[in-house]
Image (cartoon, rainbow, N blue to C red; front, top):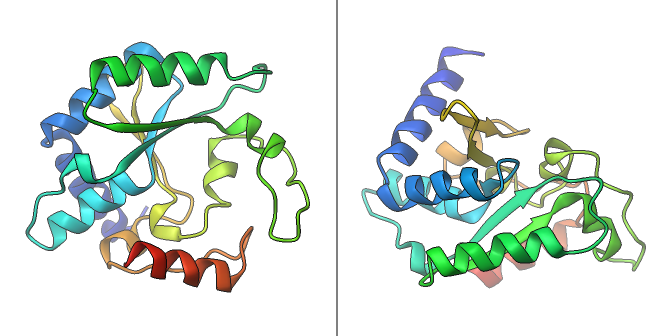
Amino acid sequence: MTLYQIHHRKILFDLILNTPELYAMLKQLARIEPRAYLSAGVIRNTVWAFLHGQTFDLNDSEIDVIYYDGQERNNHVQQRVKQTLEDLFPQQQWDVVNQALVHTWYRKENGEQIQPIASIEHALSLWPETATAIALRLNSSGELELIAPFGLQDLFELRLCWNPALVSYTTFKNRVESKKW
């Protein structure tokens, strides 16, 4: 890991640990489902707001939670985790997804089913934007654990870069425009 990467990681961890709402969510998530991570926009938007000298309002964004359970064949754990989070944090919008089940409902642009996802790292490596492909959780020791297959550079340089692994450039561009990034 380079000094640059270490610096970005430290800033991210300090920011998350010093954002009481996010830290509270991470603590509860570790208790509810230890395999689960906060991911995607809530992390990206928190960092980008910080880099612009602003505070990100968590009520302005859906909060994505991901985990991987290859033995789960239905949505019972997803539903339990989502319901518990909604009970604990009713002001938030929650999206909880077992990445092991994504292949059962996600389709490529041509309608083809995707191959089963093997892990959280694999799932993140397929996400449309590199700066969004990030996940954090508190591990069993209470320390932050980060998964960012594309690193943190795009996130900290406020860059939206297309990841061609699953979606077309047109789809990426449409996402950027629809979200007004």
